[in-house]
Image: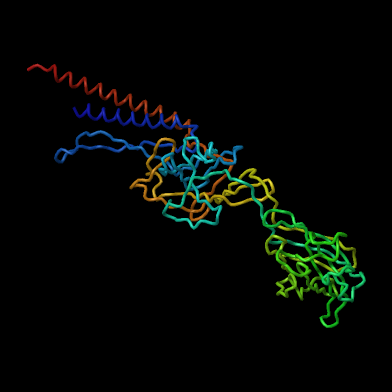
Amino acid sequence: MSILNTSVSGMLADSNWLATISQNVANANTTAYKDSETEFSTVVDQLGSAAASGGVTTSTLALNTQQGNVVGTSTTTDLAVQGDGYFVVSNSSGDLFLTRNGSFVPDSNGNLVNSAGYYLMGQNVQNGAAAGSSNSTSDLTVVNVTTSGELSTPTTTGTLSTNLDSTATPVTTAADLPSANGAGATYTSETSLTTYNDLGGKQSVNVYYTNLGYNSVTGTDQWEVTAYNAADASTSAGFPYTAGGVAGATADNPLVTATLNFNPNNGQLSGITGESVNGVATTVTGSNLTLTVPNGQPMTLDLTGTTQLSAAFVVNSSVVNGNAAGTLSGLSVGTNGTLDFQYSNGASSPAYDIPLATVPSEDNLTAVSGNAYTVSEASGNIRLGTPGAAGLGTIASSSLESSTVDLATELTNMIEAQSAYQASSKAFQAGVTVLDVLNNLKS
């Protein structure tokens, strides 16, 4: 009987091995599938001090820590994990799972769902960065890639770099300077900046440069820089500008005026003094001017790089941030899990932070349908983190992770399992023959 029992356990073990091989082969093309292996353990019956034949038992081990090949795709929302970690996903009932299957596409409501029907979870940062928790998923929500309305970004910073002609005739009468806003204002050079207000509307700012000549007290060549709201210009598109440099202004003051000081030996900007914003004196920081965009936000205008050389006036750099209103045109996902909305005006806006999760023992996660997992007592509890930090892998957009199944290896294992099963069956036949002999013994 021990022969029969042992051979039956062998056939059962080899059958389990074949089942595992079949599962692996069937999922050779499943996104991010991790192949499993069958482990054999000896079973021994103890009869007194002698060991009798017991057989064999098996257990299936999921090789979840293996990394599959990352293959590029044409879909931005296809996501692959390179390294350790799992996406946190939910089913239609809101139950949470872990998966490496990142084949996410928007459903009819704009929610990102993968090929197995699981929804991607992330932290919504559209109203500000989320604090997040390393051991709780309570702040996670389904990632939705639709947005209502349009987005505009007001101007808050800018750079204006020019060369001012050092040979220009100085203006020595204060009443004639642009800052005096007289009808006969005299200036040396002029340019304009296009900025954006709070509603995304374009606001043109006229900037005037006037040579003041050499100042023996400061030992510098000085120029006045003055800016006005172009919308307040006179009918002749110049001076005098009307009241309203900024919203609520009651005087005909420029948006900003200041004195540029240049080193007379090399023509480099050495500093800015005497800044006045809408008629109120302010403190200058470095080479920056401060003004308020009409109907918009305070703006820092960096004049670093402005020179006074014996050459014609030229604008070398004129850049501001901000954008007019634009509609959603696409999205991007960074390696650290940041999902940004991209707009037709060139602006981008943070939308979600996609975390990765891991557990102390990944191979002991409990597999469920759809190539997903739940935590178990053996796996330990999940830990959430930012992709690329604290030992977690990174996220690759427009990519999918391939199955780790190697068909050549599985087919080789199949031959071995089939041979082992056949051998166990032969042992069973031998046991049956012995039993038949015993039954036919005559006294």
